[in-house]
Image (cartoon, rainbow, N blue to C red; front, side, top):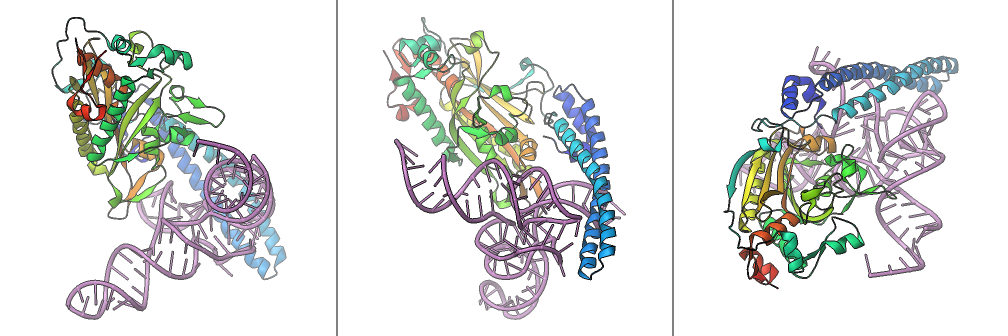
Length: 424
RNA sequence: GGAGAGAUGGCAGAGUGGUCGAUUGCGACGGUCUUGAAAACCGUUGUCUGUAACAGGACCGGGGGUUCGAAUCCCUCUCUCUCCGCCA
């Protein structure tokens, strides 16, 4: 969430940013500021009463000690008056604090200056693209046909044991997926990311920390008996590792990578969007998370984009990188680059990674801070990205690398997969 | 799952109703001494809120209560440790 200090000192900038993000309820800013003003006024009044109570209590202690019971009794009477006043004010204060917080979390992050104006995905900017779109042989098929032709993934079996959107990977399909995960993790750790295996289930505090809760509650699977949530992405457990931490400047930057399954309810999706591997309720993903000092986060974002780009390039898939426009960006992001690979048989672009700088939006809510050289505490900047989401990569590998003889495996994967071809 | 013990500042660890936001040690930072370093000695060293700046206020795992006054007493939740049981 945005800091109240920013709203107070840079209101115009905030409003301008919210407009770019197509946030409609701009009056919320004034509402928050007036709550804040009231809140501070009440707090000052209440603190004054508390101060009087503290002083009087010390005085009573002294009076009791010197045997002046009558004087002590009359002061007790005085204190109880103060306490009544203070009780009223502190109830009001708690209410105002809650109002302010509830309103503040509704404001999205402000977009960076280079974020394009726009409302829809069509207005995203293509930054660059790479690898040629292949010309497929006559008789090429979409990936779901290839999955059953080579017995790689069985969608019906998943439907039987769980439901739609939970595919079963079999034989070479399972092996290819495992090869991709190992390759991605090795690629990330070689670049300096530390590998983590976090829990796949998190508590509500973690959900709040990264912003899935309260608004996107319906997107996560909830384990009611224990009040846990299945993670929708490794970003949630990895980023929350540093919730409520205060670290030294020298500990930054922190770079983490982790492979996890991801669980998403995807309520309301339908049609060609969910065909085959396009959109699933459970899928695998390797994530990278980066924490930096404030002044380093945009250089870190560029480095992450370049890192993911080289990874996609190495898979020999046609791709493009988009800079998302204000209206298409996520709630928490200040700047996002999406990676899409081209699904040649479906003739559409599929998103396989989204790399974002959240600046202090997540860390403010999480209270993740560091002490800078001058001994001042500052909010850490957080960034994350996928590297990469598995199913759509798998789909595009199958479709783009299919030949009449079978599916050829990109060079970088061959050591992990153990072969250069999937054939019947 | 059963029984017991515990949770205090970056870490260790005192503190069982008032002068405790908290003894002390370690660590860290600054200084003296030294050619330099170590040692020794002196000093500083939590977070949040609030203010123009002071002041003021809150915080001893979370929440609630008793009291004029709570780290200290009571209730409750969470977590950790020890023993027993079960188990990949």
